[in-house]
Structure formats: structure tokens, C-alpha cells
Length: 331
Image (cartoon, rainbow, N blue to C red):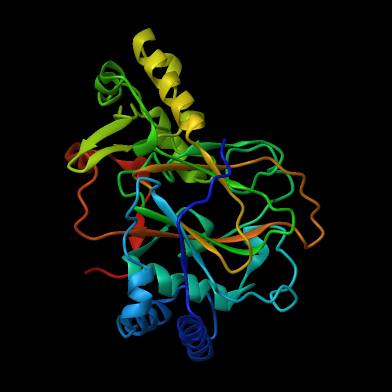
């Protein structure tokens, strides 16, 4: 894994001030960070009025890295309060930062939420939670969070993933690896573009587990889009032992290549990592959670980009394990 520099886009002071004031005004009018229809409408209206500077910073991912860091937002470590002990108890903690992230997400596309995850909120709190240390979810801490496509099990998954940092005293790294930097043999690509095994829903979607037993659809791991390969990858929830040996071997070589090109991104407060979810798998290194209010605290938003064609058309026929993806607004 490399600690090589990733592309950084620096927000100027004027743009940061514009975002902060907009978020504070929305919070004053709507009184909560919970994503009510009124708040979402106000966010969409406000985002439509932003100028060219912010829109330039929020332009699509434009390098083979498949990601970039937005830098320059202001975070007051004392004012945000202690890191919540879990998403369910977070409430409106860091509410202004929720709305700032939602504004940025709205400039980039359509913010996405899930009925079955974190009460349908459009901005999630990613914090270590007692009792979840060894799970393959964002609430874990003691284990390596395996590199994966966000919500890989679902055809309506996000095109972009945004991770905004509020606190990271221990410099805990997010890992990321782009398929556009991997080197694969033509034979492996040919195997991995075939739908052979399914991707099952992760443990964050308790209501989806019942669907997992109902003949889950096999999906391709790789897809040849117009501008290059994209991927749909989650080894922790892929029953690879059901595949034939050549496919398993090709999958393992893909894993090795992604590990080879992986980078470690240790976010600082006020930085937002934007990941192209069709090109990049992400994870997290293990760490020891203290549960004393000082642990790592990220805000997560997901974005769908209207009109984007980076996935097989056959995905439209998948049942999505009964999970409904909610878009904040349609364009």
C-alpha cells in the first residue's frame, strides 16, 4: 500500500465562507440535520445558486486515481462535541457539517439514501461502535475493512462516495485502489466480466438478509464501459467458493492488483474524500477505539450522477434484496 499523494482541490476562503453561511441559514430555517422534504428542497434551491468556483471544485473525477480530496472546510474540534458512540445516538451532532456535505453532494449530483440504513438519512455518521468491532461495516474498528465498492449488492448504488472528516486524531487511513491503475491479463478480464457469483448485502442492511436466500442474481465483477473498465467488488460478501477454479484464480489476481495499487488517505478535519464508486474500491485500516468521545468521526454521503453510463444494462433487472434507494431530488 502506498502513501503517495492523491489529487487535492483546495477550496478558497470565499467558497468556504459561502458554504458555511448557506448551511447555517438552512439549519436556522429547518432546525435539524434530519433530511426532511423541506430541508432537502432548501438544499437543492441553495445549491442551484452556487457560483462557478464551487462548481469547478466539484467537477467530476478526472484522473485515473478515481478520487480527489476537497480541502479547506473549517471544523472546530471543541464545538462539534464528542464523537458519538454510534450512529443511532448521534442525532443532530455536527448538524452544520451534515448540511455542508449535502450541499456539496447536491452540486455533484443527486444525494442518495437507503430506507434500511441509518433511518433513511442522506448523511451518515461513521464512528466506531461498541460490539461491532469485528464486522465488515463502517462501525468496525479492530479489523481491516476490506476494500469494496460501496453498496455493491445493489443496482442503485452510488456513483460517488463522499467521506467528510470531523475528527481523526490518530491519523487512521482510508484505503483506496483504482481499477484504472491495475494491470490485468486479457484472460482474467474476460472471466471477470461474466456474471458468475452474486454479491450479498452487508450486515448494515438487516432487512435485506431474507432476500439473500432467494436465488441472488450473479453479477459481473468487471464491466467494459466506454472510457475503460469499471468494477463491482466486495469480497467479504461474495460467495467465491461457488465459482469455478479459473474464476476464483482470476478474482484473487484482481485482489492482488488492487492491493498493489492501493493508496492510504489519512483525512484531516475539514477534508472531504470524493471517490468514484465505479472505479475505486475503498476500505480502512484497523485501529483501537477508545470510546471516550475522541475517536475518528466521518460524515458519509452518497451521490448518483444523472445520465451516467458506467454499468451493464442488465443490472436494471436485479431485485436489490428488497432495499429501496431514495434520491433527494430528480433531474
